[in-house]
Image (cartoon, rainbow, N blue to C red; front, side, top):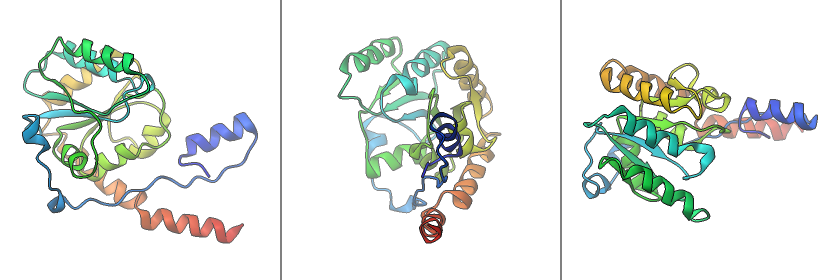
Amino acid sequence: IMCSDYQSEYFKKRYKRDCVTIPCAINIPKRNEINSDILERYKLEKNGYFLYLGRLVQVKNPDYLIRAYIKSQIKDIKLVMAGSNDTDPDYVKMLNDIAKESDNVIFTGAVYNNDKNALLCNCAAFCIPSTSEGLAITLLEAMSFSRPVIASDIDGNREALGDNALWVKAEDEESLCKQLVFFKNNMKDLEVRGEENKVRVESMFTWDKTCQRYIDYIENI
């Protein structure tokens, strides 16, 4: 069982194995149940920051995102980097060193539960510039909060988002910079993208639908 058609196709081609695709799933969040002061702790405002949420590892390209943000010279929307990587402290240090060029790049470390949901719920846009993804849970969670997304144009992200994202080339600082600026200049018009993301999650990536696909698969063995 694979979580995306992209992975199923890869295993078919690479290992000659037939796989069944059953996607990841999430619970649709209840905004009124989020109880967190994380915005106050980091002096953040609703719709006042771009959000990266994930492990701080090279394959997810947080370094490209930080460089692109600094290059964009955006001042009124901050960049929040939420995540950690205890296995590679040198890489994390390198990210912090890059970010020293801007006072608006904020590292929170790993976040969970209400803190995580509060960051997702209130970000201006969710950023996922990875070189490789299966089907990212954090992306589905951001979509469920009706957030617009700036995403690398890779198969795993397209399976989650369809065509509904501001697409960037993976490992391309200039492409990221242009889309960050485009988003800033068109925030109001892009709100509908976020609502469409929520509808897509509700129709394709809820636990009710995914559980039923597991049941159907097991019964057919």
